[in-house]
Image (cartoon, rainbow, N blue to C red):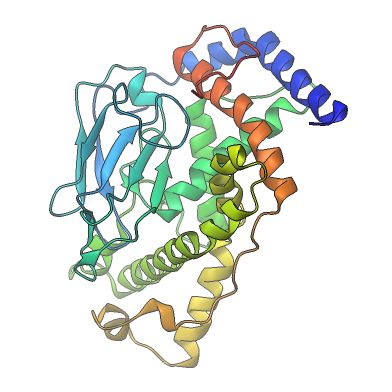
Length: 320
């Protein structure tokens, strides 16, 4: 690490420590806005049965149990985490494919090994969309630590701001929160309007394409991590490169060019892989390095926002 990079990291760590009481005060306000002592919802590409879902209490974007509370999705892709402390219920969620066990109900086949999703606390829907939301929340935390005066909102505010921005970015109705939205259920709901079902069908397709991009390009991102000890930063660096608005535009262009109907989109034989979309850029070694450095501050800030008042130090925070 160069001296300039060391200085930048140290400045951020000192800033987090100085602002810890202020951030903590903001964090205290969110205790009644999340799910309290339980967390429940669905995990989908298609619905994923037998996926592992955990509270990311260590804040390292993976399931580590013990000590992290964890469960597995049921035969319909639903999950329920119970007996959580109020603090645990405010940490992000992680959903991981269990190789050879997790089944994608769209295909009836095992879901891709190595696939995982993230979601902010309080999410009822874990998907590629919720993963983008969580990474953008983390980017907002980093941005807030790098301005004067430092501004790091509480987790409820961050989630609301980022989810609303994504809704606007995708041109969706304002009432759609993609961390609390099940496009598979909506598109198959006969009593819903044709417009609502078509929107849901498109969003399901977009999520499937984003998922395929994660699976395809993550190994390339990991290969760019140097030294290998920074591989953990390849995942968030790649997610930051995903462009859901571009994918949605290309999906809509394909639908229009081929005059596809709602019935076509609902056909189980329809394969999103046939839609030509722009590949995301693979994060460079330099971008992964920056993400790796930022991850220390992200973990410590989330810990502080959740626990309200815990000292933030220059150590590794929630990262083992």
